[in-house]
Image (cartoon, rainbow over all chains, first blue to last red; front, side, top):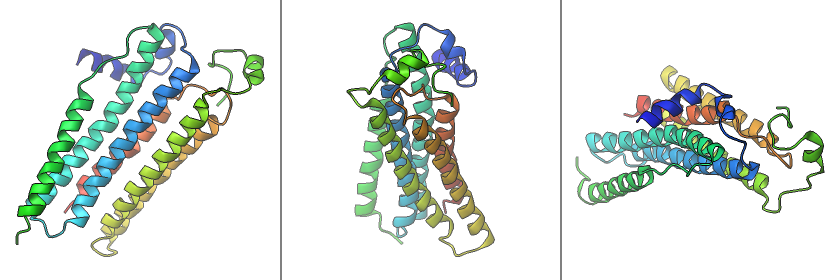
Length: 130
Length: 116
């Protein structure tokens, strides 16, 4: 969490990153940017999934539908915020010549998506009610 | 958008640099392109959602809002893609990353508001 607060400060203080360490090869920065974009696409897909659940499963009970949609939307928003945080931290690590930050976020996201998918299968199989 | 001030080399070095054999700028540009496509899909779903209950004032406002978010994302992406057209592009700016993420989070927040 302390790392998160530190990088949150860095989000809003451009130029502070440049004071640290030395500029890495621009290709590494571009690779970091592509990773960031891949996470943004993941976030957009989750948000789109939230919209889709709400629109394309109209026969589902209201509670289930809204819960699933909100879960997907929340994970999508979290994923987007985490994308920019991770990008900043990777950029800093590269400048300082440190190891790249490790994170359990991908594993947690994978689990969450798996749980939502499973819930959807169960709900679609058994939950077509009233 | 000045190209040389924070890239590694001097301006003359940058201009004589032919191209990156790994085509990193092009790959990054295409990653932005894919991301704009994802954003378009999400924004279309948002617009459909907003107009779901007919063209009421609220629905039209919501649709306009998602259109605005989409346009903002396209502007951010377009500016970055122009910068990536140079053989040795600058580091992505903080505002670019925050702008793209703000649009994504905005779509999610908007979705929460119109979920029914």
